[in-house]
Image 1 (cartoon, rainbow, N blue to C red):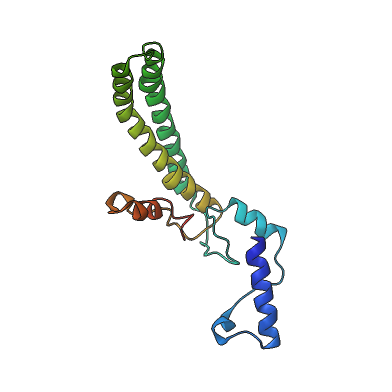
Image 2 (cartoon, rainbow, N blue to C red):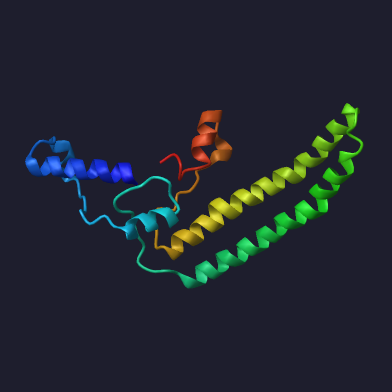
Length: 168
């Protein structure tokens, strides 16, 4: 935030003096950068600061209620999987791990499927439900929080596609 504001202010001042190139002449910088804009950036579902963000006209209250209900249901599903599947496996595997590698491998294999489901539920809850709820409440217009990461062909492509707020 501070670096972008500083750079934008310096560029706007150089435009006023006629020193900047024509490429940056379409710069729309507001000199009244305020604490309010900082707070909005801190709460908005993005990690890349801009001087202005795309906005929606209104808050769709029915849509928000449906998303909150989905968030509660999927959070409950995660809690159920953790309590009913993961905790018993971890509790039962702590004692037999002493010196027996076979038990350790068995415990890891038993945990793999429930952990996958918890990870997928967590991804859905955070990136699809929570960030969209937050964007709707803030009238934040850019709703691309992830791309089709499940179709990625390289690890680099995967990391760029699953977390768009970081990689824009």
